[in-house]
Length: 364
View 1 (cartoon, rainbow, N blue to C red):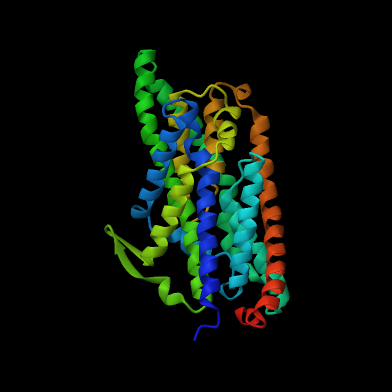
View 2 (cartoon, rainbow, N blue to C red):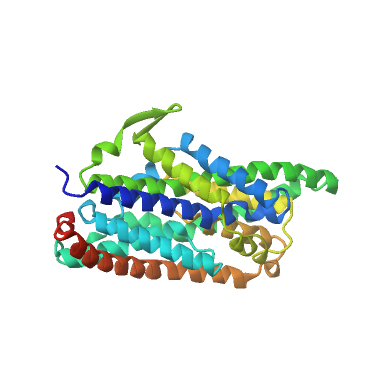
């Protein structure tokens, strides 16, 4: 017998996939900003290209980031259905708000912060811990917080170095020939960035769905050893495919408001050579984190890379006011999304308990 109604579990999984979809919408601009700004592809062509590689990531990478989300940041006993549902709703609301404001914040930071806020609120109500903060696994947050700073810095440094390398390598090449070559190469770099974006971001939703199923008595539907296109996976194929499909569809319908911020307002007049260097630098930064099983902000990785590329023209070539705006969003997301997640938990705790008459209590 399962204590949690299956209908509530299904609703939570659907909301998780909705978050994944909105993650694709929210971060689509990051995937295509440079290739659209450099006019290598039109916006419709760019989103299809990005969506394709977001989905291909399912067959290339494992599920280490998903395991970090499901078990390394919040104590398993604190990751109840209420916490997950409140965390998802909080992250969705935060993403929609920042999307409306055209603020390139991180969906990754939003979901982990919202989950943490909901978990702390849940611990305060349940009384399981002496202090509600004990619901958080502090040691698991150390690499996440480290890469909060490292991922944009790695992107910036690599972007700066790569731009110098490719500029030096093509110094004697005719300008028209070089431009044509980098228009082709940018297809590769944009695909690489989208591949890495999918590898890191889709896994976050996979980890959430696994946590939901494991905490509600439906764990048999979440795990098991499966082999998909030559790769071993410990997460059920239906979770993997549904998450990558959702983020890919979201990418195809991505928002355009953030494209202007990421693609032209940080560093104006991007050329194909700039796009190639920034996308490859960001892809490398994300790839390092994915291999280390660390969820990071793909938004900040590409933002840092674009800034690094722009800095090769001089400090004044980068519009640091937009970089500061990204940092403001970066700083605000952690407390802001956490507070929203906690509020959603309180709301769900009281409303579900009233509507379901005691069934809600069994979720603790």
